[in-house]
Length: 65
Length: 393
Image 1: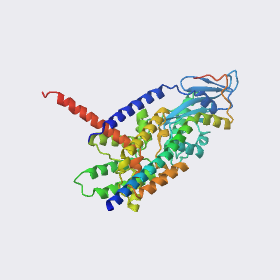
Image 2: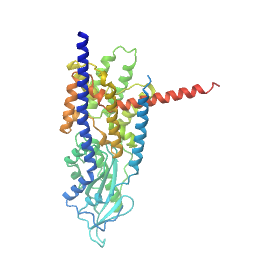
Image 3: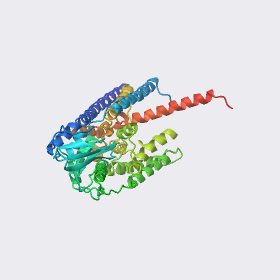
Image 4: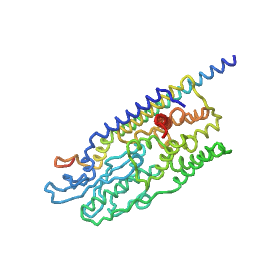
């Protein structure tokens, strides 16, 4: 009986750990995703900041790479 | 101990995948700098590119009135090189600065941008040293990023001013930064070395001393634990100047050296501040080592796949900061999103009952150390095979 209880408790703990890991991992992946979105949107952000400071869009006469 | 064949196949596949992504991301063309250069001086009629990373901003279409010269300055940030476009007027005064390229963690970059550091650089002279805490205010908790921005601005300012014919003094070699964090790190590694000796009678006490010191100094005081960004930085080949980044070299070099020579991890169990925080929680709650037998392999693989995904993202964007998903800053700097605080809360609560849940199931450092161990073992086996085949002279 005691062995069976120990086994059941062990199984329950296994499941609790798995659920815990999956939840935290989900949160971490969401955070990673937001990092990626922020990084990919960096150029847009720069363009917006330029607009906020009154920067004009690149002129046709601008020359460079 | 022999690793299963699946581990070897995964390790090899992971290394090949990282190499492929590295090559593909390196081959991508660099972004056009002109929009960034243009943003430094909005009132210019047009901008022309001159030599190298030097541009000229003109007031009129006929190019009779030169408003400013713009140069791209570079310095080492937390994740890698950080470049700033710096506009300097004919008098040698900085009149515009824009970040051209960075490898920083977005949250930290946001912190620096919110601090108004960029605005404080406007009006500085090309001759100003722009040293944090001296002629520029530092940003608490984002020192590397703030320092890199100031240094890159100083470098760009000098180049732009030199193009105007101003006498520019080239800075000497960077001053060697060797202070409390470096000293503490060396001491902690030394303590770990002594504690690892099998004959040493006070290993447990020494380990706690080392962990608490790591928690306070590496964690709360300097927030400089090993992160996946450090590893990605290494993979990307972003080697910062040793003079100003001795801590990084001691930390990564020390861990790799001890692993290679001794096959022991001098960091995780001895001075990792996040590990120490979990140990403290565990001491309060009476945490036990719990091995979920049914899901052990699944959990190991989930941890490895998450780590690989983070490294691949960092390499793909060539930005180690993107790869960082650790909760270290959330704990030690109380900085992060609500998602990160939720994850941190769960980890700390779990640490009351389970020994080091983060280290065992989520930390990216464990799969990296597993990989180092595996490579070490494979090299050792090959070496032994080779020496056995070679007849003795």
